[in-house]
Image 1 (cartoon, one colour):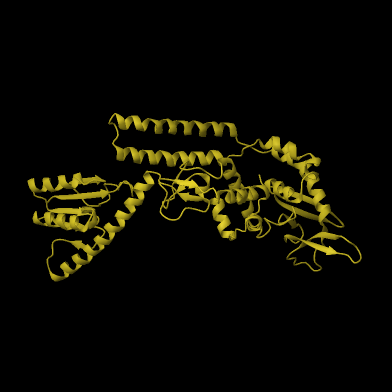
Image 2 (cartoon, one colour):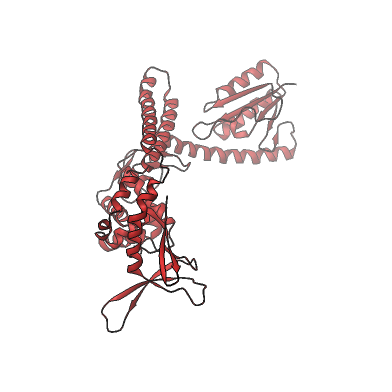
Amino acid sequence: MRIIAYLYSDPLLESPPDPTIWGWEVDQIYQDLGGRQQLHQLILDCQAESENYLLIRRLEELGDSLEEVSDRLRQIEALGIILITTEQAYTSVSKDTKHQANLLKLLGDVERETSRRRLRQGHARNRIKALPPPGKAPYGYRRGKDRYILDRSTAPVVKDFFEQFLLYGSLRGAVRYLEKKYNKKISVATGQRWLTNPVYRGNLAYQNGEVISDTHSPILNREEAAQIDRLLRRNRRMPSRTASAPRSLAGLVVCGECHSRMSITSVTRPRQGRDYLYLRPINCPQRPKCRAFPYEQVLDRTIQSICRELPRAVADMNVPNLNGVKRSLTNQIAKQQAILDQIKALIATGVLDTETANLRTYKLRTELSQLQSQLAALPPVNLKAIAQTVSIPQFWTDLSESERRFYFREFIRQIEIVRQDKAWQLRLIFIF
């Protein structure tokens, strides 16, 4: 008794399966990638030598359409071979009414699956050619012949939105700015999608999660995109609605006694023309409740503590050699680019056919995109140098509240007020 097996996979859609998946003692395995040359050879071999059993995973592996699958089923059964599918309830040994009904149902499934596969193949071919996915172009772009092109009327609006977010680090503030200046109303969720959309960075992202870089003109350069990613990660650590708060200490201060976060409240005294700001615990369980602290005093002591403690904290850090990491990534990018540049010559000399070259190009471009993202995400400046700059008190007094908020959150994870009888101290917890 001889048992043979057949495997088919489309490299555009899936990785080749492991030939040892059967769990049977198989005498010979035929495997096709894309075409079906081995299936044709299998039928020729079966005509020359009698086989008993043929194993396949699913009926649709026999062809690209219902007609092809039905024709090959007839050919195989005419040779007296028993066909067994391992992922479908089908065996060709039976010819009763129930078997025929089951076969008709399976052929209906085959027709639907082959239609879905053709649609996926069309999308995959467009992906290999780095063409935009189907659907409307994102706001700020319009569809060209083979790529997105900038819409001159809407791209400046998107650019201004990004610049506003980079300046103040506030998503809600950038959304409000857009409505006020351009009368362009978008939701906060839409603004969030804009900030993370690869299209605005000159890249294309597909449903399989892969990204191809430099496919069209970007609105954001790589450095701006990396800074936006850092701001989004930072804002995720903050309590809700504090990212756009007007005060620089919002969301950072915690009471050391009751461990409650502290909110900023404004108090107006009678017959006085100014407001006084205080930091109060939000959910204090103590009885009596922990007292409030004057905002300006906490702000002044925070600046003093940063100037005193930040350079020492940075000096004690085990900072990796960023220059070495950048050099390594740059070398890897150069190697991948050199391989990519050779593909046209390999096609011209006949070493690679067009289909294989397109697949290889796509794989190299996705790997390049990953390396470029890692390189852009590295800190762009020397942390020790910037620590020396921000340790000067004058640096902080020259900043606005929104600018101070930006720098505080770059370095500080939390500010804890430690009560000592009638006195109190600050304890800064840095991000690194």
